[in-house]
Image 1 (cartoon, rainbow, N blue to C red):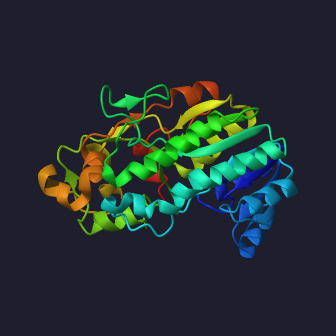
Image 2 (cartoon, rainbow, N blue to C red; image 1 turned 45 degrees about the vertical axis):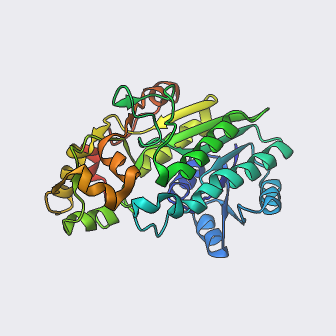
Length: 315
């Protein structure tokens, strides 16, 4: 198939390109600069310089690529400070890519008769409603209000998911990726979380009962290939087999990266420091089930749980 990857040099795109090339697909990827085109050429793909926030640039890129499938992996996640009280400010560009960028790509897809559209969303836990069971499926509702620090980010996720799955004449697939770990990510041996744990600056807040879902970055790539090749339209959680509360995974990660055992901090003390949203991440968010992706996509994560992955796959 002819496949166009928007954001082909990012965290997911850079792993997805060689997998699709190896599978025999004709891959074109977008990048923001000429050096990205050189990197894509080295992986066996064709690079196109594209401004994802320009409708004209996106239309021209899709016209040149002539794809049967568009994969939307556009984000702007490098250089985040981790300030949970400024979540929406830090994700402002990613939110634009999930709204304006998605609209431009779908318009180009409609113009050029693209039959399938696969888009990155988020399923690591915080977007789901925080009532009921600790683990949520794709049929469970998203939260109405995630906290004032993340309202714009949730609105952008809703826009992307509703627009992609509702696009007329297009097979729209949304992949709710879990929290990434592995080489080049915050949860790696030399990543930002590891640094904080080694400095003893990342506590368990409250009871640490917020449930997170993780996924290794390489498993994200293999799941996305499965969605491109055989996924039915709809939404899929792309996470590992073991959603886990903070009070389990954070001390375990600290041990693997040579960090200090996280201290405990009461929620009432932490709330002024990390905000309503940050406190929820530590105490009340829900995890995600991968049952649908495993059954419908025929996908199984290589790293079945974060316990295995944090030991051998964080880089």
